[in-house]
Length: 290
Image (cartoon, rainbow, N blue to C red; front, top):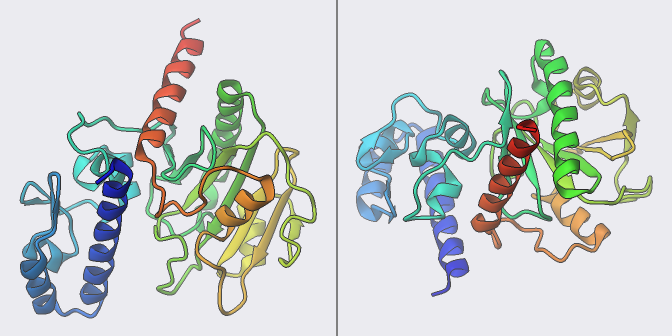
């Protein structure tokens, strides 16, 4: 089986296992979680979900459950935990490295799985939030600062203007439209801007780009947010049904004529994610060392 097929199978198994366990955990049926864990005992590399850990909704690494880390791949990658880092799990046998490109007190930048173009990265909150619209107002200026820094450094490394976008989750509810329930803003070196007619079926609203205004417009609902290289920000709250999973990834791929697959689950390409981290850190270190 090819490396790509192995990665797809590993990702599918881990995702299905996580989702099934999560549903049982939410139902407070620890006995069923334990029986399911005993029955399946799915193992990939060093990753094992034991019955005890499953009952607590926790990940286990070499049989030792982590009692403090939220069961989230982004939290794990930011914290530097190989037992809860999806890129590391998809590159078994390699020495573990913490793939964080840059960071601040409240934010960290990690490479995106299934990158739509070279240099596709995710700006994540350190705190496990559902969307950036729910960000603490005290962190707004810090976000603006790291956003400017990240855009500048990506454009220096890749020589292309950067598109920023988010598929934000609703403040409440159990719908997870992008598989990961941890707030993440996409930064994509695209080299082109999006016209005002981008996805004409969506009721885009131009706004000032602040999360205070985004929170007011969305009123706690799921939303799409796009900030183009010219600094124009647009937002679209969802209706009752919400937006399709990976809606913006699919739309941007089609609009920009990108060659890569939009569905990161089908084409996670962890090697490309690793190389994005490696190139960014090497080149920014060279620049800072001058």
